[in-house]
Image (cartoon, rainbow, N blue to C red; front, side, top):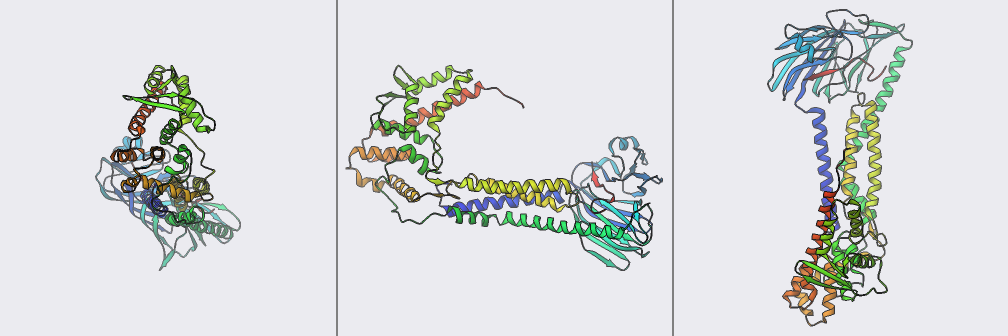
Length: 581
């Protein structure tokens, strides 16, 4: 990507970010409303006297034998109980209806042991021993609810939790019969519109996987249930729900904001680029036949070959050629072997050249460095991890250089700050979801989209260091000049004009061509122009010999190492929800 113009790089990164946003949105929606088992339509009718009728249309897309409805409250079958409970009256379905009650007793026309073995406590459902074929199946339940009833001198309060742990409900309708005229106020959880049709209240919507579905009511007459005296019921319920609705609005707004941020991410990175990464404009010739600046080859490789902070072996190869031309080293090729003899150390060698000089000297045998001999030496160290690690450290000194901060403001650190901020947002969202996700299902969206937001920033980290940063002083101009010089070296028509130049000029061009990563291509052009530079024929063998030595070290080291192992929302009576197994 480093060779592309910056606006094109921003476009590519924007496409990647949008793909992450769309992909994450699809996965989130699949988790919330899809899967191999979900409820297509759920209808609940709550009537005077505490009667609850439920109709589930299960959509089966996988292998299931039991479609059920689980309760968090004690479930009894046509029996009474000493505390708040749910009494199951009837189950209608096409196969074997069953109840496994609070005590673990199973009520079913057949297959009692199989049901007992597999069903949860407080579960009602429909069992098909042969398994359900893919399709839709309706199961109807009828109960009487006996919830806790809080009351004071004038008001009675119940909170009916219809679902909390359940498969997705794609469409639900809750019908509350107020023909008795006892209902004074309804508070749905989560917030939703309540429509009044005659003497009925209608609630409609969809409920994602494991989301709260609850109806809290204030009444002027006692319903069936277990009475608990509490002063100021109406005021307490009102305050709790006003606080809940306000918090839910905040959570919804935050969730919407995170969703918009993920899909507007291209604008965010463009803004970062505009503020931190945009470079000054310079006019530079398309082709440049002179070396822009006398820099060491390794430095040219580090700064101007690709990313301004990435060094590779081409910088090492170019340094070898340069040190040979300066009389520090003497190289020759013998078949697939490259031999190097140290001639003399010179004043003025920088730290990297000294690392190369010391490496060649340290691994010389009888005064001659040989890639073939070095490979044999490495192989002889097989199984000796400590010695191999020392060789690796020596190789690292010639393979790795990280010293570009003097020339560029590294944009990765800028992106890293935004990534850290996005990660903090994600962790905060995750904590909120884990603590209150059931009562505030919208927090799932906030958590997922904040995670996507973090992933988007993480995906920006591999971008070139100068994309979201910038070159210091006038180094960007020099970078453009080196690009023009590389373009010149690859253009035969321009090279032909300089065939009469001194051989030292061509040698210098070859060194910088290697440093810029186009050594092979430029060497081929030199051959076609009959430029007599000995290093042209030597270059392919240098590449092959040192690459082979690197591979030998990597494979030997790998084989020598061991393995290791190393009152309000959510407070309602009932709970549970639909499922299958």
